[in-house]
Length: 223
Image (cartoon, rainbow, N blue to C red; front, side, top):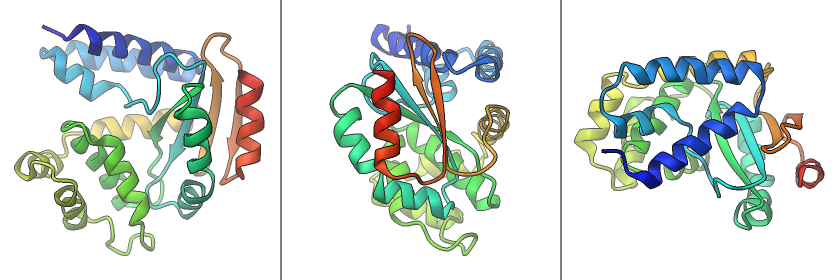
């Protein structure tokens, strides 16, 4: 039986994504089809919804479409994201989720798959943070399979489970679908953001590693 609390989170997650427009509604339609093919409801919750950072009842949602090898994504992560977390995520005014847009090489897609393998053990955002903390030069091997496994080890994940997940390409299709929908949603470079009021559907697109003031203005306009 599905845990009621998790089911509520799943429904809220779908509602948030649905606010983003036709392309993301289409995404959810494909997710629903995937769901029908999976019998274990608990697996549905982990496979099909982007893990949300922050309160599921927040009025504003920040969608980041990014690549773990993207230098500008790293710049935004270092210089802008901390203030957004402190002033909007931690205060319950906004939440955030990440849509994979792995355009910079095969290691980008593999790193994205690894985040969902970590999510199987409840460590999606911990792994997400680790990837940006230890980002190296693009396609230099810093995000190859062995390094991704070492990151998992450092996070005290069950390594047998993680390695089986990563080696089996369990989340390959999910990452490809996210890539397609990020592109359909208007992303042409990384990072690209959409700031959404989840009640009205009003949204604003921000492209690039913009400073905190740009995001502060956009988010406050949605509150």
